Image (cartoon, rainbow, N blue to C red; front, side, top):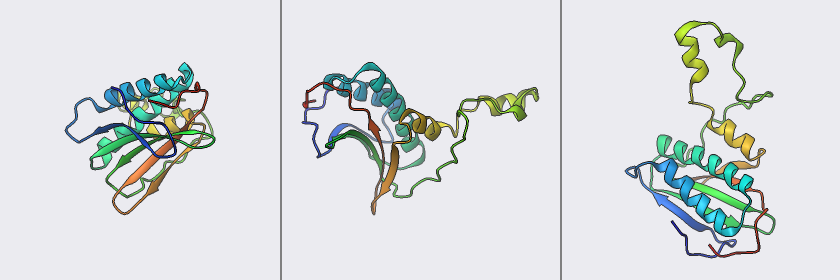
Amino acid sequence: MKAHCALSAAPCVVWRWTSRTPDVPAQARTALRCALGQLGFDREAVDDAVLAVSELVTNATRHAVGPYEMRLRRTAAQVICEVEDHDPRIPQIPAFPATAPYAPADENRGGGLEALGAALTESGRGLHIVHELTRGDWGFWSRKRTKTVWFVIPTTFAQSTEM
């Protein structure tokens, strides 16, 4: 996957998908990894951005209607990744814990299969993961028919501005 546009203040579309697109998170990860690699981002920034976008496209596909779009935009000081869907409602943002979001809950220890299931559940942790990976530099904005979730990618990339 290769985007053919300049990375500038105008958003560059990296990938589009619909509700019928198979294996959305994997395709989004591949598209973003390719785009950021072409821009010369370091491995750590790419890995964090790819994991964050995987969570966001999963949420968009699971909880909102399409079509969907992933974009990159460059400002004077940063590169921003955006994921847009066609549901203008901003989701309820979970309270972020003071401790790491991956710590096991003591109330789920030694409680049998039900407690084990609660401890292993994947649901509800995605935005916590995005928050950690972006060091809190992410958010939402809404328009009449769409919602965009965005996050900042640390700008440790080379001088290239073409994708």
